Length: 381
Image 1 (cartoon, rainbow, N blue to C red):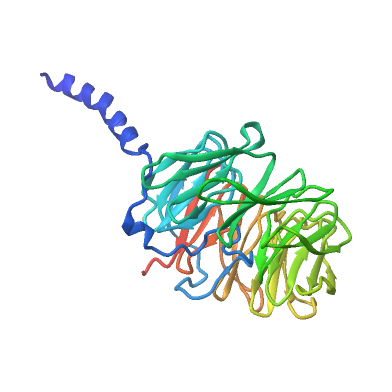
Image 2 (image 1 turned 30 degrees about the vertical axis):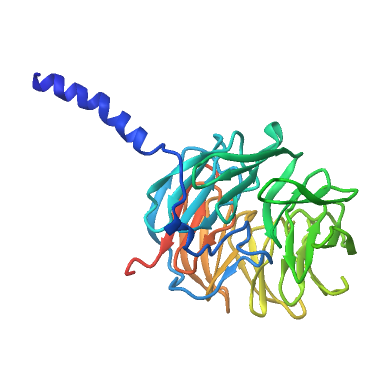
């Protein structure tokens, strides 16, 4: 065979081999199953505080790896078993090695997995967007579908509580399912819609509603414990720490007693709030539509410091040790000192930060609306 023919054959075959090697279905190994999962849900853990303490992250935004996915994120990214789990809009859930960014494979989602993915043992659970509204369960060891159930208009984000999958609906339904077979355990109905997902602490599920009501619901049977009325619609999850920290669209931040729903304090910011507070010890951090990240005292809600990012903030902030990270709709990412708001690092990512940064304490992962994934950490690791 001539050299020209060999060259032409390589030109044809090489892209095909590359494509095949990068498009295999994902299968979870027993070794991976034993690895910790530091950011399992849309805000890290069940309480939705958006924080990880400990680790080596130094606040500087050194890029360790970067991938351009070519498809928008459909829901929140998570960290499971050493993998970054990316639900895309092209009907696939992509998995990447969290350390290297290397592709590990994909799961077919048969729709945009707008809840993100939660993993229960070796089961991947997610619900797709309204056009193809299915709640699905896939066995990660063999890639086979275990079950699927019809659902309606799911909100972004879901959690596992007491061996139950808990999912909100924009129609005002909060439902709990058995992960292993999809049977419904209980369902709670409200008059408004649940745009935001639920949070959990001490036996109670906290569900914000777009009618301006926060519902406290028993995780045991789905019954209402109490409800709290705030001044305007609630469109983001609450964070549960020493209090239940909530926000509304008119720019109010609330500290609510978790036992009885009494509003202990209320603060007003300078713009609409679409974000969940990030909580670090005695402070919480809230971004708003006029481009500020505001640090508030968790005990009484007074403002400790303000940082002007100069652009709309739609994605919730994340606390990584002594630093708080926040992205903007203009594509900027800031790393700030939690004590005084001093800028430690800054990056321009090119387009809007779509969801909250996720982290394991050593590395921070950020996605943009165009599908770029960037991993930040210490380059001297």
